[in-house]
Image 1 (tube, rainbow, N blue to C red):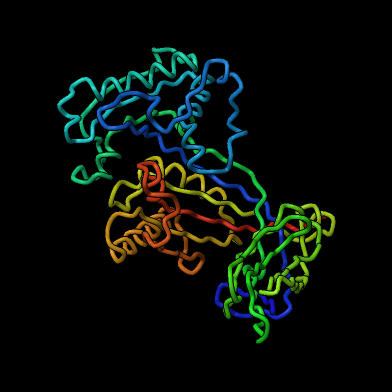
Image 2 (spheres, rainbow, N blue to C red; image 1 turned 135 degrees about the vertical axis):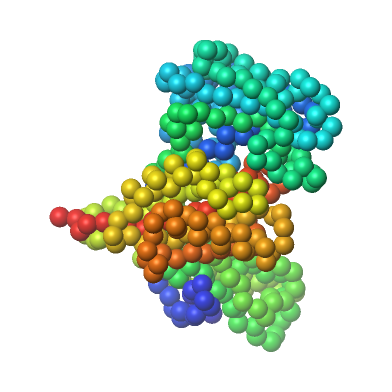
Length: 389
């Protein structure tokens, strides 16, 4: 037996899976922090991708993947390529982690100098455009009494009065939605020959997209798959096959096809179907344990205002990192959502907020950059497009 499930657990017998393409504009903010290993000023030991001069000439921001942490790894190259085309200056400030690193006076300055050296030698940035500074703890430190805080404070920061140098990376992509979003498989268990091994395969055309398998009898349970089809967009069925090998070495097989209806952007244009533009904006650099918007976030929020139309549907989702208890993190993420809604001037009833706290952390939290990016609010703006003529 195969059926569909929605997010609330509602069943859809004999479903037709609707797979629809949407145009999406996603904004990836830059995190202008470079984190160093303890007592080190080696840029090669950071998570930044370092290029050779010949590679820098081939670097294209438009070719970056739509991945926040991948984009972070090219943060120095993004800033370097932008600075090469502009006359504005920027500042590089090195810091220590507030513990034993404070006993190495030259360490924070050397961190800033090494980043400046990369900018001049690889990207050809004039030294006159670089202001190098150093301090001990950052102005907005993470708790230096914790290991996480020490990792995050051992950094250098890049800042500039020219907002263009640090503006978010914007990517235009195509996203897909599935309705219903989950496929459930409940094999029928019949008494008889004992089973030696079994597997369940879900195929989309020639590509197997999900498998379940085991030894002995097939469990009397429901197998669920969050639908993630192949990239092909022809309306061919999904194929669900259950295979079993009994203890006599005889193979048994059962198959069911699940119909799909796939709608591409091109289909919509040809059929003049009204469409929706989805824009996703992420705000980062909420200071540790704070909900106020930094100047960088205010700049992003002002840009978001330009995308909001009278018929836009807005969802604001707030997150925290792993630090702290769940109740406190829920309140903190809610406060961040409310700060954003107030800054955007949204009217109550025209938007929804989802305070996730730390229960669904958006990025891995074993790295300082992953934790920093998790202190975020994501704003999704869905705007119906005008009917195509």
